[in-house]
Length: 220
Image (tube, rainbow, N blue to C red; front, side, top):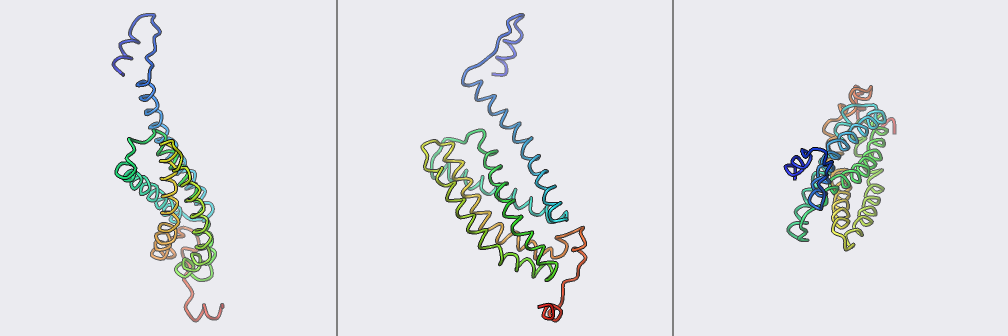
């Protein structure tokens, strides 16, 4: 197609264009690749800034962005396996990765905000490790319920007789479940416990020494 276009455009005063289904597919694929390379880093950058301002830290936003990207990659990989070996789809639409990314990042960041803002509030009184457990206990039920509802909603798209919609619905529903039941409930909380007060670097909270059991008992 590229060679054909080069040859046609070289004809003097022809002002010719090469069209057809093959050309449309080629142009759509290149446009989707360009969008992915532009929009995905831009969205991640904007989300990183918002999280940094909200949590007043650098480490926590970087960790949360990494978990969102990991959840997205896992959803794409598992979905690709099911599309090929279970549903026997012939392929994915060019816009499939971008649509799934936008949906999963939007939902995943919401869950991160629900959890980590509560963890930060608890950490000021209990320390980061105890605060992570207390924050998860306080928000886990809400996050899980919301995730199950959203996953069920997107799973409905999988019943449509349009392969593109079915793929997006399945991948987003899977990603939401992974994000809700594994990433948010286990991975983010475990990383917060492991990093402890360093999670809030460079804010003042990163230098706070967690209260001892006796001090905590007096506070309570």
